Amino acid sequence: MSENLTLELPNFEGPLDLLLHLIKVQKIDIYDIPIAQITSQYLAYLQEMQQLNLKIAGEYFVMSSMLLRIKSQSLLPHNDFADENEEQEDPRDELVQQLVTYSVFKKVSAYFKKRNEEVPITAAKEESVPQNKKIQPLPKGQITATELTNTFIVILQRMKIRQPDIVSVNVNETSVAEMAHFLQKKLAKHQTVSFFSCCKEMRTLSDVIGLFLALLELCKKQQVKVLQKRTFGDLCLERIDCDDK
Image (cartoon, rainbow, N blue to C red; front, side, top):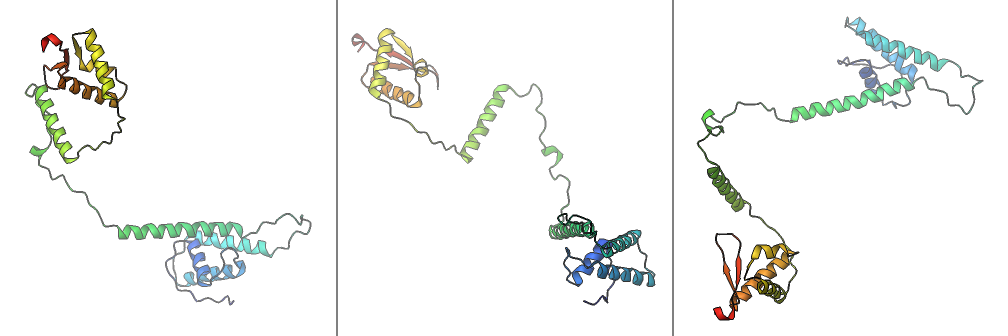
């Protein structure tokens, strides 16, 4: 391959960028750089920049000295006294490592630059909610705990309508007759029995359901009278004797 190379003079970001350009133009394997050829072309490029009176950063000259050092090391004869099994260090390894690392960061930088151009520009704006519409602290002493509770209940009901609760419950069947016998034994000892207290003795949800169905069955047979003092309150089970019917 000829060492003569016609170079356009783009704005390189540094000596590594220039070397990558030379390698890419000539389709050179980055892991097998012909150091003499690249050094000659690199120095020719610096000379051309000087003839055009372009300012050259000091790092370009540092790289040129590095290339000359690697070239001189590659021209030195191999050590005949070295162990044949011992792999001798290639003077180009340091340069190759720098070029590979720089190439990776250059590609990553180009990717983020492209992403930055594709993402639309966003700008913050001032809040559009008027001051009087913002949430204000509750005035002290003007709202009671009961009013807060009622308001919270209304909110929960609205949320339940929007997002109804869906629950799957697996219930094992419990014998109603067994639960009826349980209540009859309780009522045989006491004239009145609390339904809630009976529920506490149940082990599973199916037992509670069976207990309630047994209560309804006893009410149907007029063996039990049920009283409730308030909504959702406890159920008071009262035994009905034969004389009371």
